[in-house]
Length: 445
Ligand SMILES: [Fe+2]
Image (cartoon, rainbow, N blue to C red):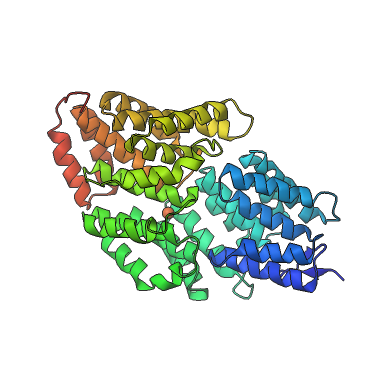
């Protein structure tokens, strides 16, 4: 007898127990909570010929965006080779194999085709959404979900996650009011949907609603943080609001607590640690020896060369921790990646490598060089992924480079640009004061 998932898709090779574990893993993934990998490992131990069990396990490894787990995904996919599978399942295996081989965009396209034929395949939608994030495709963050919505309703299990993703896609496309509405709707269906909390947090970040953002994430932090493997990033958003209010002790407490206190070892969490320290550094805050600890955590990933976005964040820690050895390893990994066959060659050549050099220049006091490089990178930076809020680090760094190099015209222009979208920000006013006072400074500051 063929068992099906909660949405009626046949699950080749699954026992009733394995099919039930699959639904459980999907529910965990949809809330970013619990341990879906362990749940699926149980499922494939029970049913070794369970195709979607292997496929989802591979997808979860791949979403870590690191070379090591991508290798685990490749091994997992091998275990599914030759198994009897439906066309939908075969398409999952092909798309996951593409990503394991470094072809991020082909994987995203393969999932798109699955979603066209099977719009209620929640796994295909969610992994596709994450790939849209990794590849910086704002339009598809929204539209991959938009086009599946007619097949969904509140009667379908997991509908909250579809709305949560739609909310984030709308936000990245600048449709803030609709994003907020849809994000709230998702949370009415399931309060634990960390991605939906995150989507609304992004709206508040982009709309300069700093006080509301703090209140929002404090409203029910247990709902989005308890047992969640996405919580660090939402804590990071909370710290971002506090940073805007110049509440440095709160920012550092969040950093030393839920952002970095548990000594994260995954790129996904270390990215937030680097990004927060970098922003503090731009504001001239003394971060003590925190860079050293973050650099040590990044060290095993210095040669990863799997995803340019991660490499740049690792390099930020290495440069401020004075780890020239590890910085050299990242540059070497970037050189290898740039000449490789996968999509990361493009992410690295277009964005990762020039951005790394510009940020290193800024950190080392070559402000003119930093400004020159950042101006080239900024317009194409979305191509290596991340959100608008994350890539704001590039804008902030460019403004700092312009001010510190004494290029008053550029600094004023950049701050003016920021004032048009973030007029209420205290930090914008502070930048404007500094831009107007900008005068050439010694390059080795
Ligand atoms: Fe975010």
